[in-house]
Image (cartoon, rainbow, N blue to C red; front, side, top):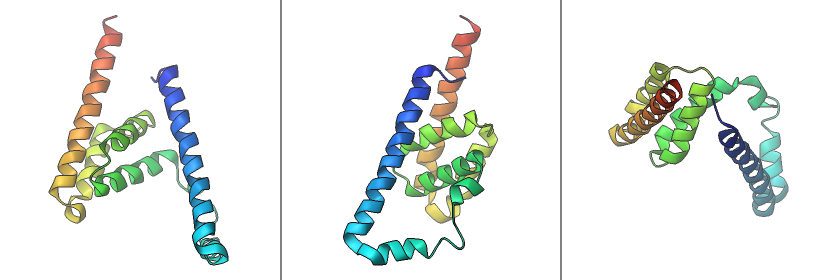
Length: 134
């Protein structure tokens, strides 16, 4: 169960993501003008609102795979692993997603990601242990 402070942190991250999206749109307009808007507009017939088509749990799985592929985003990866677990993903599923991308991203990225997953699992186990023995 998440604490109110964790909830506030996640809400701040969500707000930051919205701000990044707005900044991204503004940058696209500044750089590419109407052509950039036209490019994005060309996706509407196949992806009018892709976020609404994909459940939160599935989006977290995709995010874990993407951050694993990046290989250098462990703090963000750990946050999304926590979120995936909060949304009902199992530890086995989280590890399976990380291992699934191994062939394409390489051993080093997967090693970093499995280490991040282990740290998240240990944090959650310690928290559960504290709650059970408080």
